[in-house]
Image (cartoon, rainbow, N blue to C red; front, side, top):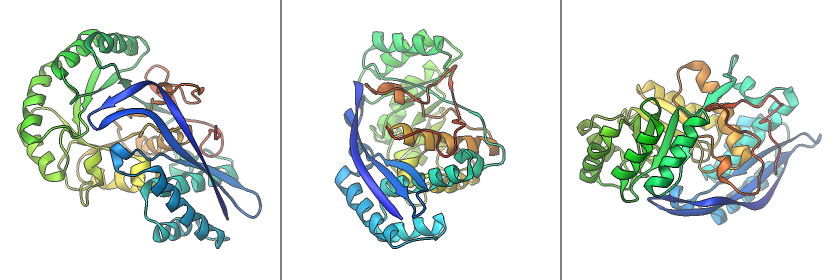
Length: 343
């Protein structure tokens, strides 16, 4: 099999501020896998250094190792191909790209969407949250009101940036009482700060607080002391975190998990712990978002799924969104494979 890699970058319309830094563009590595008969599949690697510690150079080097492995392979089953790649370079973002491409190829060969290969009755629509990015009260209020008008029932706001209580109060006032409001601190706080901040934000009515602190031990302590549902995100990468039962929900991402296959395995561990899994992007490109949608559609067929963070393609400048949210949900692509083409 031949693996080819091409680098590109997507520019955000407006820089996204998070507690770990400001994101202005998203470097991506587009991957194509083609067999001897010409059947191809496509995927992407989306490293985000400030978020997951990986960088483009590390992922590109891993993909080169994967290309060398795949060049020696012929008729092996996809799980065996992925296992061989993992043994050569265990870098989740790179493995995610290979896994996506293998699923895309399998779906194209079968003439079915990937979700139909994952589940007998995948959901046809995935409920998603709006991402509010304005750093000030007035801007955030305007975005919240607009999102509700567009049909979103769940809104997400970054916190740990200063004036959190004022910004969240403004978002709640603009969104009205019925919209679910979740906040994401990206581990900005220590335990005591998290408890104080969550208690200050709680009167606004929060669906959940995502990653208030980093680490299983700290998360367990915060959850025991606050009246709001707690979700983990970055902490989900910690050894044993998925089944630890320290959170009410777990945010799973294709890139961090290492692909669709690994995300579904992770979701099973999360559900066995009594927590709710949901799927979000690391500001992925269209292929990554499509992979997340197919995984979420399969998960939704097996049980209730919280709103997923997969409505992020609209944050980018210069691309047509092939998976636009409508009335707070994204339709599952119906074309074979992932259902979108590399751009």
